[in-house]
Image (cartoon, helix red, strand yellow):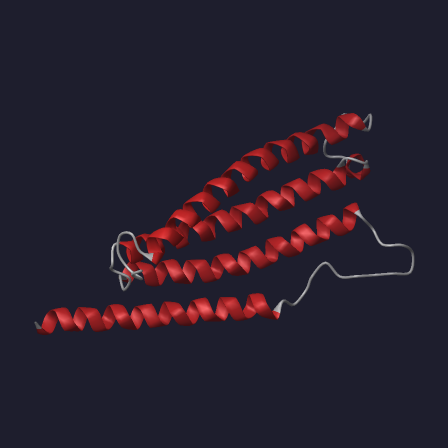
Length: 176
C-alpha cells in the first residue's frame, strides 16, 4: 500500500481523523450546553437568586458543572488539533506534503498540544474538586507530563523539517 496519494495509508488516516473530529464535535456539543445549563442553574438551586454570589457555587452541582466545562475546553483543544491534522493529512493524500501551509499547521498543532495539556490539568483539577481526598492528603492538579512535552518538541521539530522540505522544493522548482 502506498504512503501518499488517493487510496493510501494517508487517505485511510485522514478518514479516521474525520471520524474522530466528528465524534469530538458531538461530545462537545452535548457537554457544553449541559455544563453551561448546570452552571446557570446553580445559584437558583441553592436558594440564592443572584448569580454573582460566590457561595452559590459551593453546592452539589458545582463540581459537575466544573467537570463538564473543563471537558468542553479540553475537547475544544482536541478539535483544534484534529482540524489541523486533517488539513495536513489532506495534503499528504494529495501527494504534496511539503506545502508551506503545513509548516504553520504543524506549529499550530504544537501550540494546540500545549493547550491540551493545560486543559487536561484544568479537567484534573475539576475532578479533584469533585472527588476530594481524605483529610491529611494533598495532591496538585498540575503535573509535569514529560511525554506531552516530548510530543510538543517532536511536532515543532517536524514543522522545521517540513519548512526545510518546502524550501528545498521551491529551490528545485526554480532550477528547472
